[in-house]
Image (cartoon, rainbow, N blue to C red):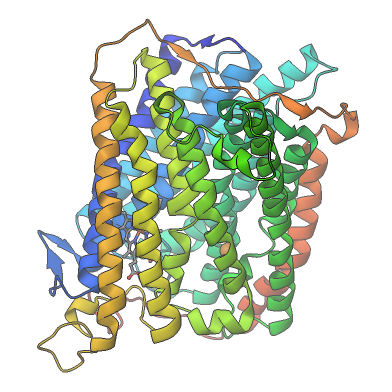
Amino acid sequence: MEAFKINKSSKIILLIEIIFPIVLLILGIYNGLLQTLYRSGIIHGNSFLGIEYYQGLTLHGVINAVVLTTFFAVAFGNALMMFYLRKQLNKFTNILSVVLMVGGTLMAALAMLSGKASVLYTFYAPLMAHPAFYLGLALAVVGSWVAFFGWIPLYTSWRKENPDKKTPLAVWGMLSNFIIWFFASASVAVEILFFLLPWSLGWIEGINVELTRTLFWFFGHPLVYFWLLPAYIMYYTILPQVAGGKLYSDKAGRLVFALFIILSIPIGTHHQFMEPGIEKGYKLIHSILTFGVAIPSLLTAFTVAASLEYAGRKNGAKGLLDWMFKLPYFDKNKYLFAYGIIGLLIFIRGGAGGIVNASYSLNATVHNTGWIPGHFHLTVGGPVFLAILGLSLYMITKILGKEVKYKTLNLMVPYFWFVGLMIFSTGLKMGGLEYGEPRRTNMGLSYLNMGGDSFEPFWLFTTLTTVMGGIIMTIAAIFYFITFFGTLFSKSVNEGGVVEFPVAEAYHDEPNIKPVNKLLPWAIAALLIIAAAYYGPIKNTLDNTLTKSPTYLPSSPVPHTH
Ligand code: HEM
Ligand SMILES: [Cu+2]
């Protein structure tokens, strides 16, 4: 498919949506490295260069896992809609969305940087943040909705003009993703607008901790699929083509995205297994449904593997497994392949660990230990992060007509990241699972402070392993920043101004079954299942929470009085 020329406002807005979060990411990565240094006792203080421990951890989580991922989903979505539907975005929604997202992020960033919102990216009550933090996050989320609302008329008019065509798979995937996002983030909007914000403004006294936490995880689990599906779109629609082959089955891809619509949300209670107020039966239901959501991921693993096998054979492989070695791992001009395949490899380990977390008894063992961050760096910090890095660079080259600068350095990014991440997560996971090493704890100030009373030498090995991995990951990130900004500031080689992606043809392009080619029925089914799965847990949090909690500020262990 040919490149699509975008208009000036889309060009500027896309650039903002890509560059702004990458600039913030410098701060995000810096604070990640600091976390490893605190954990291992290399830093043993409450702050480093003006940023406090919990302030830095909040910045790290919010920037990397919320800001970067949301901006990227919107930017990639905007680009895909224009490219596949051959239509310009609606100028009004496009501008409104970027203003809300950037404005909201800046508000939240100011609150975090001034030390008034050190509540971590889950902002659990009764820890209270400055109202600007909650309001900023809410505005940023609404901004992403506005982008989505702007796509709907484009899509419906495309459908009218092309009644017999199947929705392009990438568009199908992106719309599925934003249906999930919209339903899920409606819950966090309720949490913020009806509870956290008025409480933080002093309009209401006390807070129902279990209710707000349940509303958070109604959002928080599907959030991980909102991170992941853009990477899946890359695996289905881009990767097979870059590898030199075809997508094995178009129908499998469509089914996977649709299954995520119905299965992403009604499983959030698996983050609340240790929550006393929710009955065990509901936890069991969410646990079973969680195993259900492994199905679309396994489908993806097989479909993508079959697509790559086809590519390997087209590239000349003959035997049973040699196709694996006929893929463009080290082709500098096909760097998207390296970013994609390395992400997939990491995800094999991430997915396996997820099954541990979903199992009640194992969950009890790893709860609040280093295992948990060890796990999710293999998901959001693996496939998701690498897809974001690779595609952000790719989009920039098309929009600005650039050639990637420092191609070798760029190719080294996913490989370095892989090595670093494997070491890093082994340290955290082993520390958590075998030695009960806590997460979200300034160990440099306590257990790994060599001079102190609570020194625990058996955590040294695992935390130092984490540091080593973290340093290699930071080096990979620096390679990326050099490549990204080097490319951004290099001379243009053509006039640019376009969006363009490699398009994988389908090997099995199943016929268009019209009723199945619709997203609305899946969305309605999702609402019914969600209502059934969440009625009980929400009622529990209302019935079983007899008193409201007083307010706590991150700086003090005793309740705060106004
Ligand atoms: C150089 C790279 C990175 C390093 C060294 C690093 C390090 C860490 C460490 C040590 C923790 C655990 C803190 C604790 O619980 O005690 C952590 C938490 C976290 N990291 Fe990273 N990280 C990196 C990159 C990333 C990336 C790329 C993402 C996501 C895209 C990410 C997302 C998170 C999140 C969401 C948390 C949880 C924060 C919380 O518990 O509130 N990190 N990171
Ligand atoms: Cu989850």
